[in-house]
Length: 228
Ligand code: C5P
Image 1: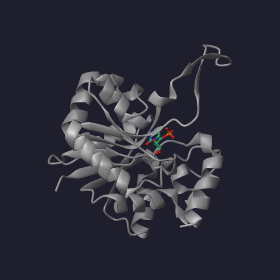
Image 2: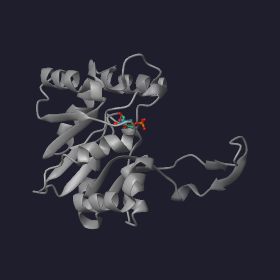
Image 3: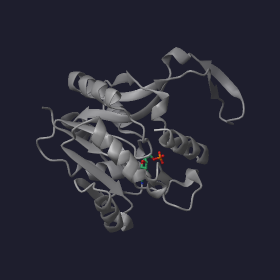
């Protein structure tokens, strides 16, 4: 059985949500988002390790919360100022025999086992794979002002990156080595691995795996969770 570690970045302030409650603690389906997403993570794959970087001053509290909800095997650690640093901190704790690493945003609670299985297969074959949703709308690129259309893109070639993103551990390690301190500039690890010169396989994803970012997303997530 391939050993796959999961890193679930859960630090940052989640400012776009406009909530006083930190994002990992907003309630969905009657439990904090961090509990809801981690339960789902446990369902989609038998991960060998689950690493959760959180705000440095929240490590102790988060550990207690997860213990209370029966999530004892989750390893909580201090995240960084940028998402990329949080993921890197998790990566540094991965056990040596781990073949694949899956990175999944805490803010995507509805990830499915089917998508995860597709990603593991693709990453085993090609070294790097990400879930991404094919654009359904017509996509416009703006000029520098951001107020006028510069051109219309061919939507058949546009995919919106999601997570999980799955890599051979050696591939991600080499990418970190190659880009050095620039790793902080990337908003996802597929971007980093791409910059290091690797090919990334796209596994077509689904709209249900949306990221809770805005207050509207939270309303939608709560409705979905209630219907389950
Ligand atoms: O801010 P954004 O929605 O892109 O964050 C994506 C994911 O990265 C979230 O799950 C968030 O908790 C995490 N994050 C992190 N450390 C940061 C900033 C964001 O783990 N410093």
